[in-house]
Structure formats: structure tokens, C-alpha cells
Image (cartoon, rainbow, N blue to C red; front, side, top):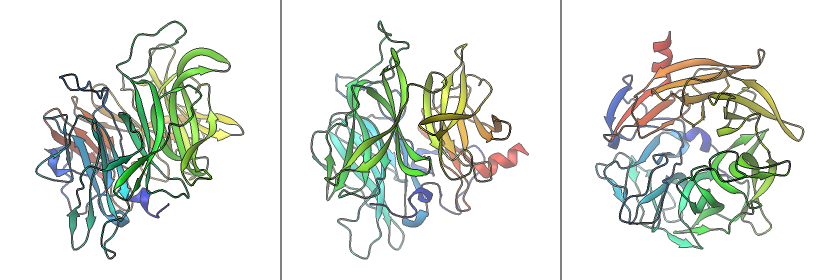
Length: 425
């Protein structure tokens, strides 16, 4: 089921809010953020909280028709609580939170004159809970309780919304489930240390009434998934990048590899993965990758955060050509950055930029110069040096994009694209 305006709804923020540059505010103000579905390293209780690989943060459109977004994060005081939707009190669940995912929820239990409801899925050790909002005379919180689970739901490590064109389900999310953490040292026959989770699986889940229905694990030819990214690629909307840790037919060494699938609907009306490009590698070993419109042509490309020969990091953008990927441009070697890559629209024009964060807290934006065959730095923005997690949203519909960082004390630091461009002049 596809609804118009979904993508734009994620990138617009409430009008009239104060946007003092680099401001720090309590987390409960819940300002606009981009979609980030992060996970915890462990899910079983052993008397201590599971180790964090990245701080779970997410954003969901608060109102229909793109009138705003809401921010959610794992609470800093408890692994069983999530702070979201501007509420003075966190939402408590019955186990350690393992992943957050935004999802537009169908109006199965709202009055016929009410708009659709939008919100978050909170995955935790004991199951899953929904919390969200809708718009009547004003914004109304529509927090739900625990969702019934139809099927087998292993521990959820990461989640992202996906949108098959048709089907007999409610809104669909792709999940990485099960597996083991933390990573171990490389074993014989492995080119690099394993990613943060190994032995996991990919499953689809969808909302049906007041239940979350969980599908069977997808067939990944024995590969171990560790990352998910959904987006438009080569002119088609329904793509899912699955980062896998496996061997390849012409490379019998185990390493991270990028596999691209289309999310299609089978004869049974349910979502499934259809292989599009199961690559041996990018031009170099990589640590993260994402879809984006880097040319501005509206077709959708892919870019990777890759490892240079000296162990540093570099960026490369690719497009789909024939039966594989063709390099569009590479960046110069980057300063010390975290192993996370995002795409956002901040600087202007039609194209998206690639965004990385340095270990010192600076956000670097790179744009594609197709004529020169280069990814050039187009914006640099100072941010806080110590954070738990960060996320970014694109400028859209006259509203600026924003960066939101969760600080160790539970407050939020944020700035937006208008302030950043003004400061850089």
C-alpha cells in the first residue's frame, strides 16, 4: 500500500519554533530529525544492560501531509525507557530496548473522520510497542500498548520501513533479527573483523489490526546481514540495501559485501526480497553505504564509506549501469570520521549531499561534481564533541533540514541548514 507525501513528511519540521544556532535543549522537546533506526548489541538479560553499538534514535512524521516530525530516543537514564513526542515522561517498556523504527500506522482503530496515525515501533526484549500521534483540532498523542505478535519474533537488532508497491499487508518494516554480538576477532579465512552482529537474519513484519505479523526469514544464501538501508535506486523506489558478511563466488574470503534487493510482493500478497545486485564489493572494502539522489536527476544512486589503502576513509558514489555499478566520483581521503554515512539535502539545488561526522564532532557535507568526477566538500559544521547518537533530516517544502544530537546528559543539541549556510558565508 503506497501513500503520497510519505517521503516529504519526514523532512519537515514545525513552523515557528526557535532555531538558535547550535542550541541545546532537553530531550523532551523532541525536535525534527531524520530517519535513523539503530540497535543495541545484546538482547538477553544477564543482570546488566546490553552493550550499545549505536544509540537508538528515530523520527516519524507527526502529522499527515508533512506538517512535522517527532523525535524519539532511548532514554539516558534507563534502557527500558524511550523519550518521544515532547512528553514530560518517558515511555516505559517491559524489557531493554533493542531498536526503534518509525512507521506510519494504519487507521484501523480510529474514527472514520480521523486522519491517519503516525509513530514509532519500539522493539524490546519482550516484544514490540507502538507510540505515535495524529491530528484532530490539534496534535493528539495516540500512544498504544504492546502489540500482539503473530509469528516468531527473535531479538530485533535493527529495523527500517520499506514500501512495496502492492500487497495484502499493512505498513511494512524490514528487520535484522537474531544473531550474536559483540564482534569477535577475525578467524581463519576472514579478511576483516566481523561486523557488530553475525549469524542474524532478515525478516519482514507488517501491521495487521492490533498485531505485528512477522514473516519467515528471507533466503540470503547463508550470508550474515548486519545493515539495512531502504531507498530509491536506478529509478525504482522499492530498493533495500542489505550489508552482508560472507564469501563470494570469485572471492572466497569472508568480508562485508553490499547486496541490493527490490522489495516485491509475492503471489501470496506478502513482501519478499528479489535480488537485484549481489555485489562482490565496491571499489574498496566499506563500512557503510546509503542511497541518495547525488546527481540531482531523480534516479537514485548509491554511495559508500570505504577504507583507503592506508586504513583511512574515503567516499565513492556509484550508479547502476548495465549489470553492475559504475563509479561516478570519489572524494579525497577523509579526516578521522565515524563509520557512518548519511545522505541529506542541505546545500541547495536538486542533489543530495553525503554527510559524515568526524571524531572531533564536525559534520562534513560532500556534493557530487559530475563534470570533474569528484565528491567535493561543500559544507562543514561544528557540532558537539561528545554525543550518544545523531541524526539528520533534509530541507524540504520551505523548511530547513536539521541535525539533532543526543548528548550524554540527555539533552539535545541541534542546528539547521539555514543557520549552517548563513554561518558559512
